[in-house]
Image (spheres, helix red, strand yellow):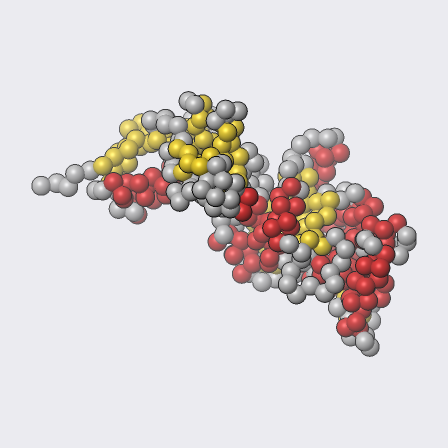
Amino acid sequence: MSQPQYSELVSLHGHIIDSLILAKVLDTILMMGGSFDLQEVRIGVTREQPSRARILVQAPSEELLAEILTAIQPHGAAPEVDRDCEVEPAPVDGVLPDRFYATSHLPTQVRLGGHWVPVEPIEMDTAIRVDPVKRCAGIVPMAEVRKGDLVVVGRSGVRVQPLSRPARRDVFGFMEAQVSSERPHAPLIADIAKRMQALRTSFRQGHPASKILLAGGPAIVHAGGRDALTWLVESGFVQVLFCGNALAAHDMEATLFGTSLGYGLAAGRTMPHGHEHHLRTINRIRGIGSIEEAVRQGVITTGIMAACVKQGVQIVMAGTIRDDGPLPGVITDSMQAQAAMRAALPDVGLALLVASTLHAVATGNLLPATVPTVCVDVNPSVPTKLADRGSFQAVGLVMDAASFLKELARELGWKP
């Protein structure tokens, strides 16, 4: 006697052929022990025309069917029968209902009162809070949920839109994290530079989603990328900077003492008592009151932080347990820092994550999948870790920070 089959009819819409979405969905169904019948496949005859597929997903148990439907949902496979999303109130402050829906960073909609509404903004690893009266939905981090908030539970009435492969054939056209130290970097950096030029033009014209974000670590200064990054900021290629205490401290140390972590940048050797320089830098800025005031007083005249202050770059400095000082403006509460970073993300159209493992992963987790992202680190585990955390839209470059920033700046017109 044949085993009874449980089934659900799902549909896929969009560029599901050239983006290999249909193939991924069918492969996932088979790999998990299910089967399928293709009820309908309509293929768009031009690049612009979308395709459609209706798939009957089958499994030998309700539990396995639910697991398969969960696995293929991020690829855009939505049940044909539209149901409103389920919601439950948060039991207490800071605690989500047990069955809360955990978001990805892909564009997401929920069905409220018979209407599909977007979840805006979207971010991975959060829950969805809804207002049935206003018919709107947004993400809510676990720590920010309040007792009684209506939170989406289960997966019914939730629709995820996969990313289609962009028409533009540049490094971002593949939207996959490919990490290799042996790939040629020049063509990739040229593509990044073209994207940055277009975004700078759009930003100056007041268009949305045109800011460029750079999240960087102190290796930028240590390795010799300070001048290149300073030029990028001065030339309008950076509108948002995420960093920690160290990047700012060592950048200003270079201005005051000509060293970075006590190493003479011009002399090429460790300076006597150089280990004190970053402490004396932090102490002086604390005495003045702020980095901005130090720039206004002419104490800090060169470098990354001076350029950011003069250009009006939005700076978010998130502290760590090992920070000295820290500098004024460094946010030492991690949840407050996360909130400040989240608040700075609207209108970001490109993210460069350079030489900072913690900031790269943190920023990648906050970004929607629609924001092209570049992760640069001499350690291949950093872009790999970012991809493993779910930021599959990040392009990984295995190279040192200074070389990347210098090549990028030269591509954009820097003449050192």
